[in-house]
Length: 98
Image (cartoon, one colour):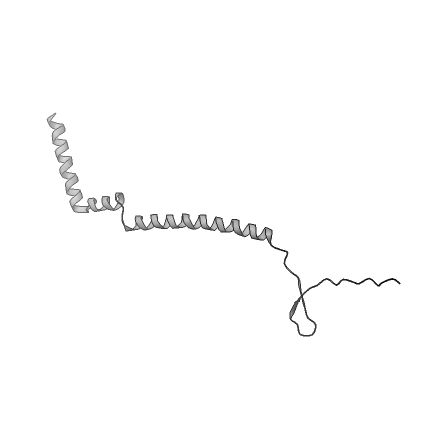
């Protein structure tokens, strides 16, 4: 019984000496308690989550717009000036029969 008490006292004394010498209390506080970086990371994670939801919403809207839009128009280059002009389908008129 006495031996166990002596071991406990010695162990406490050794732990207190180690903590004073190596500042284990500060290290323990840094690891276990929230600090500035932890708070910043939480705010970053929240904003990333919000942006992810916003991006998904925008992708759905783009898909709807693509489905509703018309086909892209084809362009050809003008022989005279080289600018792009819209390609049109030439409709041949039927000759009127007499």
